[in-house]
Structures are given as C-alpha cells and as structure tokens.
Length: 233
Image (tube, rainbow, N blue to C red; front, side):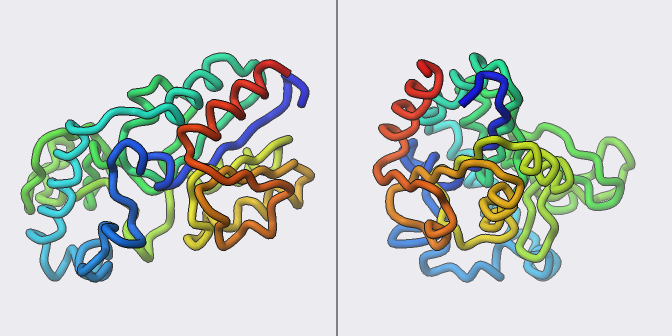
C-alpha cells in the first residue's frame, strides 16, 4: 500500500476487552442478566433516570482501573507515523485510544467521560458522577445526560465517516461483532468504493464474508503485527 494511501479503521469491544473492559455480549458481558432497554435507550432514561445514570457512573469510574493494551498502543503508533490520511472510528465509549496517544480518532457511539445537554446539545468533558437533573453550565437546563448514543439514536459524525470510507484505500475492522449497524455496513461501503478490506478479530464476525481477508487471534497480538508490517512496507 502506498504511504500516501487513506486508511479507515473501525474498532469495537474486542480491542478494549483485553484491558479488562467487559464486552456487551457473551458470558460476563454487560447485558448478562440486564435488559438493554432498561439502561441504554431514551425511553429508559425517561422512565428511570437514576438507574441509567448509576449504570454509566459505574462504567465511568471503572476507567480508572484499566489501561491501554498493545492494540491501542499499536494503533496510536500508526496514527503518529502514517503520512497519508487515517481515521480511527471507534464504537467504544472508553478513552483508551486517547490515553495510548491516538489523535485522528472519532467516537461514533459517544464517550463515558463526556456529558451531553439534551436541551442545547453542548458536550463537555465529565469525569465525576453525573446525578439526574444536573444543570447544564451553558444553558442552565437540568438536562445533562451521559454522552452516549443510545439504541435508536443516530451515531455521531456519520457524514464524516461515510466520506472517509468513500476515499479509503484500506478499511480495517478490529474486534467487532459485525452485528451492530450502521458500523456493520462500513465494510460494504468501503468495498464499493474500491478499498481493500481486512478483518482482525478473535473469531469470525457476522460480516466476515464481506472482507477480502480475515485474521483470527487476540487484538493485542494481531494489531501490533499488522501495524509493524504496514509501516515496514
């Protein structure tokens, strides 16, 4: 691949799982014994804001107990070294990519360490607990909520993501289930624009058939090896 080529990377829960952050699905996942609609929908927030805020307060606090792993660090190294266009689109709401040093980064599903004003739309950094009815410092409305894209809401920056996919020479999906849209459809959009496509995953995803190549194994091993080979070439 030319050093001036454009790369779009999609990362999912499998990247952060090796740092100790629970995934959403499977044994021990965040939703085991907990209905998604009770904690991650606009209706849940309206029905029981204390439950929803407590759920995300606990997840936010848990970030202090984890650290970036080798996959995060390798992607940050690629971000710093790649001379062409690069965009890391993450479905993860943790801050491990940033803490590893990634800068060309977009959180399509929001961020745990951010609060959103449902009244004026202001987003602001937030590290502390976020009680229901916390007032927005910008507009004064008691409307601050976790800055998380709930099920049924539109992910952030879709126009920017789609434009990057249309320009991409290479699309790489890392640690994703291939079951959550619209991210699950990115591979087809990139391929339709002529990009090569690569999947790095612990096991074959729901969308593996759409990729030119799938490599199986832990992200902490696969991603550094892929980054090393790409930069060496």
